[in-house]
Length: 75
Image (cartoon, rainbow, N blue to C red; front, top):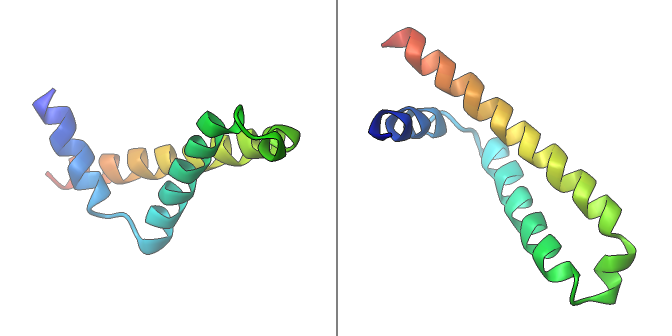
């Protein structure tokens, strides 16, 4: 488990500003999804919020895996 955390931290160190921006967008959208069921505005547009959240999650995971694999090659 400790090795997994070290690999993830090494991968995150290589994130660019855009990667962190996408990660922040993902976190905001997940918060909206949790709170959406209390607001009629977001319930009307829930499909769009889900699509953008899933796309942002996929981008963040791809970057994390890509940077994680490049860290292993250098070690």
